Image (cartoon, rainbow, N blue to C red; front, side):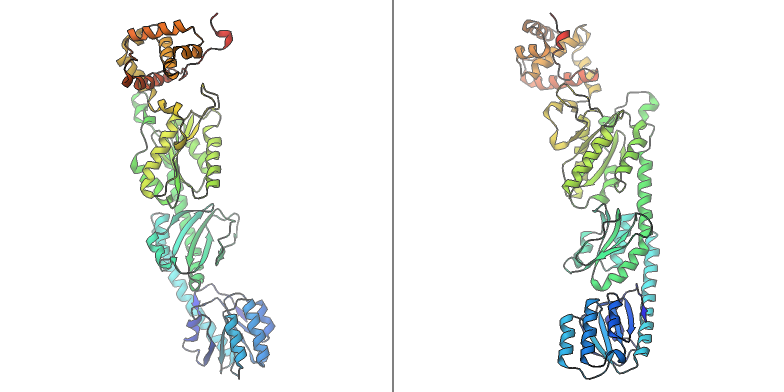
Length: 527
């Protein structure tokens, strides 16, 4: 007779239970060992069919003599049974010593073995009912959770402050607080994992002692608990999984709504959009990123000059690539956080963003990533770094620029010096040039004059090198420099050289011209 169990009952509950009198303990391996099954067998070889954490009751027919009991202990050890109960009889010290070495609890009884099995099953059923009621109560409280983080904290509290977290693609995304995990951190335990997004129906539940959860699912609800609490944790997480999954889907839906095209004030009043120059609002950073910032992470920012038109498409691409990572929307683009503990996985993810987002044909989007951060307090800094990197990147193009291949996606700590001038907004620069150098703007040859100035500055003041860059005679470049001086551009003051260089570079970018003028092709060069 075998009775399967998913409840949370310990061996000590059976030993001290009313109605189970007459049990004598010869060896107790672990009084808090979990009891999952009961098995009444008449032959010790039948023990080879029982499951782990089973209390085996061996009838008198199968327990005639010490050698039979010794064989039954070995079978129980192989099957990881938690206890063996046999009829009372004289025992040699070697039998008890064998139970001690195999770490299998050995008990005897004077009563009828069948009656004992029935009484133990009743006690086991009562304990399961109590466990089920506790799980049901916890599930009702979970239903009122505001978000996945709150649900995880509630589960941790229900499991005596055990570590509980949600794992997506092998990375922890939500977790109970470090304070809650401290009491169990030093205690050896087992991991219980329940799939949230199973691949197909009936996905197996992964749990193990020292090993990790099964890798057959994209999202798992995991708890690290003491061995004695494993059965209860499995039942609790299984009941909590639908609620947690619903909270995750609700969060993704909110992110989708937030990313849909919005009507900007600039579009309503008909003025030029300047949202690309405004970093994400700090409140958006706090709302969108905090649950994911567990361990090392970095921020990713995507910007576009047409965020209203590109919103739905960008979010859909992101959701297809990273369904477990939320993407937040701000006026000039989108940002999200990515775990960075696994550098190889992170590199693949960033490459996927560059190839699938910013290099997509016809998609005017640029991207940037921050440095790797480790503190939640650095979330705003990370987003700002990613936003700055995205601002200087080339807008979704594979075309070569005057300085080499296009850079549609740039890491903050790898921004090349040649792109620093892009931090000056081109529209603003064009207006400032009109205000600061009105005579230059009024000159019909202003573009040629500005190109001459930029070429000389790019060549560190060498007129000869600037002439070679532009494909002009040295005297022509010198004459243009003199003319710009007459029109108000003074390059003799060292403090003005860098501001003028940045301002004119940004202004030329606003007209669609090259940021660093180059010589024309040989066929177009002057004779």
